[in-house]
Length: 137
Ligand code: YOG
Image (cartoon, rainbow, N blue to C red; front, side):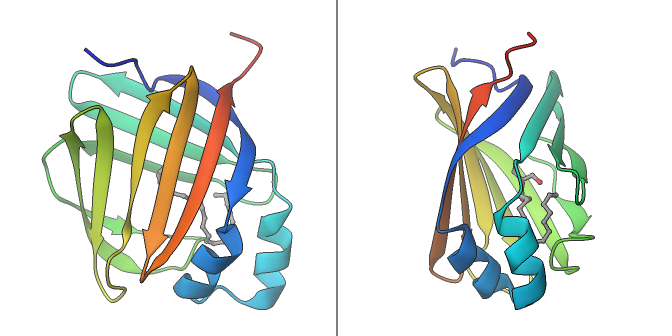
């Protein structure tokens, strides 16, 4: 079994967040605010049910899903699009495909060296985020 994604995580690096936001069509003004955010990720799991919270003082974004069950996702407060999302395990990676207007869109989470890794991708842009476990736990 692979290491658990569960816990509270603080961002320590964020590569090409700008490229990802441009691919999503985020306005330059919002991009500027978003680029400075210290994102926090809170992940909870019960069997095949997940809750993933992306938290910041500016906005929060929360999804819940069951692995291998497609769901309707509305990216409210992000790019405000409706997508059909499907999350599945691919080896030790939790992979989400987000089908909709934007091609080749999704994300992937895994644990490596006690860190939470996240790749966010959209139309050829790849953003790589790394989180460390929050010190309070
Ligand atoms: O996470 O899809 O963990 O949902 C990245 C936002 C910034 C708003 C966060 C608010 C991408 C303006 C979601 C940020 C840029 C920028 C705090 C990443 C879009 C808008 C919410 C994500 C997955 C995987 C789970």
